[in-house]
Structure formats: C-alpha cells, structure tokens
Image: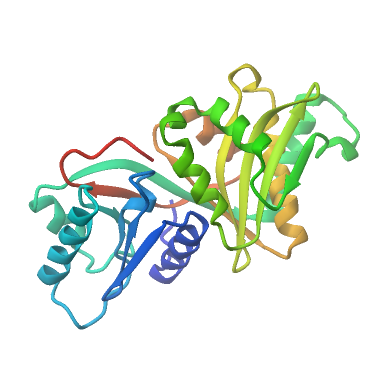
Length: 274
C-alpha cells in the first residue's frame, strides 16, 4: 500500500461523500455530520477530515453526540488517515467507541483498468473479437427499476433497507452510469459509476449468485472504465472491505491497488452496515 498525501485522501473521501449522499448533512467546524435514516454506515457517520478553529475537540464531540441522539442513532465516525485531529481514533477508542468495517480504498488509472480487464476477458473467452468486450453491458444515467431489482436480488442482505438505498441512488448529483450486464437475455450483474473531478467512483458491484465467477463483473468494470474515459476521466477509485475476498480478487486482476484504509468508530447498539 502506498503512502498518499492527506490532500489526495481528502479529495477521494469528498468525492465518495458526494457519490453516496445522505439526506441530511451539517457542517461542524470542518467536520461533516451525515444522517440518512440509519441506512448504510457511510451516510450515517461523521466525516472528520477538516478542522476549523471555532470549537475545541471536546465541544465538537459533545455536539456530535447531540446530533445523533436527536436522530435516535449511535455516534459513528468514519476514520481515515486524513482525519483531524490526527489522534482522533485514539481519542474515540478511549471514550469507548469500537472499531468496525475495516475497508480498503483502491485506485488506479483508467487506462490500466481497460487494458487489464480486456486481457482477462480475452483469457476467459479465448480469442474473442475485440468488439465483443463490452457486449451485453448497457448504461443509463438514472436509476432504473431493472437495475435496482437486479441489485436487490444479488445483495439479499440489503433487502430490509432497500427503500433507503433507492433514495440515496436517486439523489446522486454528479453524472452517473448505472451499468447492467445481460447474459442469455436477462440482467445478471450491475455496477454504478459516479464521475467527479476526473475520477470514476465505482459502487454497488453485484452479480446474481448463479452467474458469479463467469466474467460478468469484469465486463461491468470494463464498461464503467470505458464510460469514464469517454467522459475524460483519468482515474478510478472504489471501496472494498478487507473480508470480501471475491471482490478483492476481481480488482487485483484489474490492476486496482490499495491506497489507504478507513474504518468506523461506533457507539453501542450500532447495526452492522457497510
């Protein structure tokens, strides 16, 4: 894992916050407080990557507690190497908040993704004509019922919060590409790309169980990279949990490399969400 600058980490986290928007946000002297009806950790956590000079740390911590208490949620912070103050993680640990959901943020140049996924698809299919690399993948600029139904079927664990996730996906402000991969005439895999500041953020990669390990996700990733290049993006970022070995293998084959990690610090009674 490389050692990125704090400025680069802040940029990527800023882009990711815009790509996965909460229903309510509040600025707290440089920290961003997010609330989204308790749907997903990211959208219900503090992003503490900047600091002002109006409040002491103790005052800010108390205001965070009040904010989430008003919404009936436990306190939760998203902790990465750019957080301020730099020892915030240790401060929160001493206050009894527990660590959860260790996640890698991975990045790569788009051209590398395009070339590596093309090579992988070629190896899977034999000497398939190059025009077939993107066959079966379609993109729409807005959430469709077909995309969301496929996503729900592929990710059954999110079924109880489906409405909340749908709301998030419909609120994305930057240009987006909702990719659907079809095989034998039916949708079998989906992915989401969000274009911002020359980067494509990749989210919601999901494949139906019967179609996994057959190249569907690779085709979706390839398609999103081509879409980003068409819109003059140069780099890609994504988040993947440490425990997701299948996704880790997919992204490694595509040349995507870990840049930094983040995790959450949570108060008691936090639900297990990504």
